[in-house]
Length: 164
Image 1 (cartoon, helix red, strand yellow):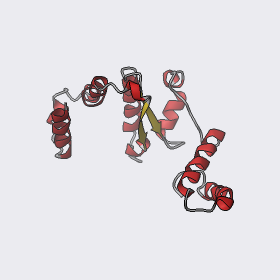
Image 2: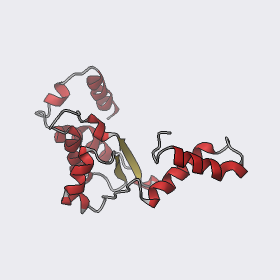
Image 3: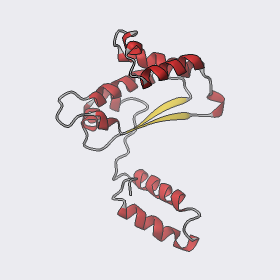
């Protein structure tokens, strides 16, 4: 319910760990209670597929650590995705050569999953997405006759990332 979500958010905002302790410090139970179960109660299947985008998951890792929270998070998302309603998916964006990228590349269960897709920066689909993104930002800002040139310049100067 809305009240449950508000109370949970208040507890998280106030660093109130009692919500975490209620689940015996089990992150899977907490994620199920806060994310999966509310999504299961909310039926939005008639409005098509919905995607929860998670970006920068590799950034939760410490440079000097041998424990990688990002790997824990990936495993949590893989397990949780099996319990998601049909109309919702996770899209996890990770940096190449991060610990989580190395982990995923060696984990057969993840790689063989029906929902696993890897689009590397040298993949044509990636370049097409980058060009589409650039065209979308430039729309109504650049004259049509200059659009293709502007897209090519942005794609090249961006060093193939969305952070230009």
